[in-house]
Image 1 (cartoon, rainbow, N blue to C red):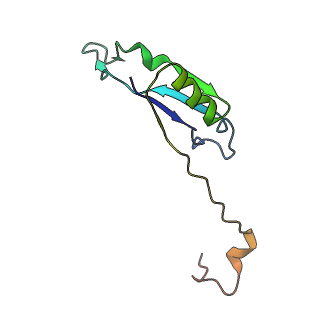
Image 2 (cartoon, rainbow, N blue to C red; image 1 turned 120 degrees about the vertical axis):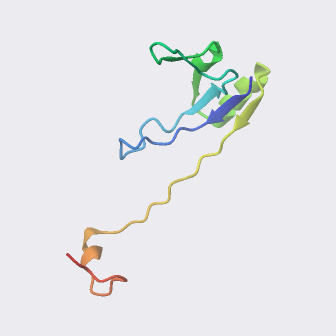
Image 3 (cartoon, helix red, strand yellow; image 1 turned 120 degrees about the horizontal axis):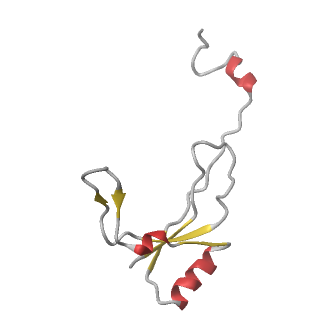
Length: 101
């Protein structure tokens, strides 16, 4: 019944950072998924997989887990480092690699 506290990364389908400022508390799966042999659906008898709690800060999520006696693990986020460059840098005369067609 280990809980995981993390901040989600941005999806590959967006360029912005929408919905990445909240902290999420999810439970780790206790029972593996079962595949239905006839239809191929996946299912599980673990009801905690459906719990998905959102918090504004990391401290609120940790306080909730401690208050309710839930063992937890915090996954720290990696901050994105932006490399600012302009379009004109592609055509500079002192490029490291020569420009080709």
